[in-house]
Amino acid sequence: MSDKIAVVLAADRHSRPEQEAIQGLLVAGLEHRPELDVTVVPHLYDLAPDGPAVRLLRSIRGDMIVLAWLYPRSAFWVLDASGVRGRLGRTFSLPEEDAPEPSRRKSGEAKAKTKIPDRTIWCFDLRAYDDPEPYLRQIDEIVAEKFGVAEPVAGRTNGEAKRLEEPTRARWYPVIDLERCTDCKECLNFCLFGVFSLDAAGGTIVEQPDACRPGCPACARICPSGAIMFPQHKDPAIAGDPNASLQGLKLDLSQIFAGVDPAALAAQERQRALGDTGPVASDTATKQPPPPAAKPDLDQLVDKVDGLDL
Image (cartoon, rainbow, N blue to C red; front, side, top):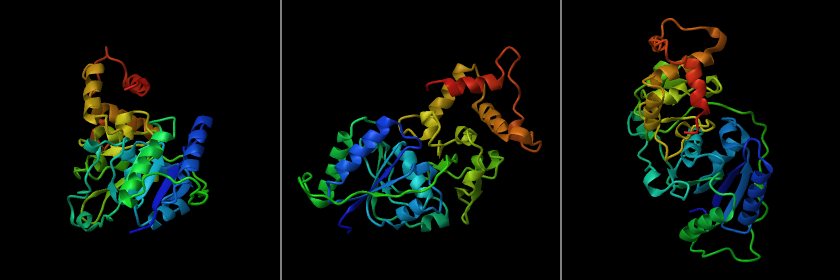
């Protein structure tokens, strides 16, 4: 068993002064807990697949605490997609009823052979509080349970936190929740950009993440099990909020827009992402019947959807 818990604080893309303040207070508090090994990295979702931060994360063998400006479910599966695996720990950001067991990868021989390390990854959403104390208190509880240490001791320190600087760019790509994914291949058939593929056992994977068109969440809308997330999307259901139901979102859309098929909205989003490449004649998913003339144009509907606070 490791004598420390790795703590990774992932900064936001463009941290505002108040975000910088809470990040600074968190780091200062964590540095006085010698049971922790603290590292600050750039925004988790934007890390390059083979960059220094991802290599560092893969090198961590023991338990891990992750503080990021993301929903914990999406942060966990972003890590998993980068080869950083474990079981998702329960926190105030992810209550017990929302934390999956690592049955993962229930189907397919290759998935069954994927070894899940015997370690816990606790993910905290830094948007939950504007005060570092709730995070520090729960981290103290994690430390106490693991090491039997009741609280930080004045004067003790684990040294200054490491800061890993890495040039990043704003990325946009789908993340698959492998606990929800049923390998129905709807996303593979629907996506025109070559993002999805199959592994050796026929399981769905994101093979070309950077082929995804920025701003297009269409595959998340057509996924029957709500397994696809875009962590930076403004809709909580698509961004990975464990309390938001993607199915509920689809039903609400149908009611709001008087029967407009969510699949038609997804097809329209995809077509918009195609830009100047034009329609693909062979794709039946784009051949949705147009809404009655009295109803708004789909472009207007999508704009309205994007503006809703759902």
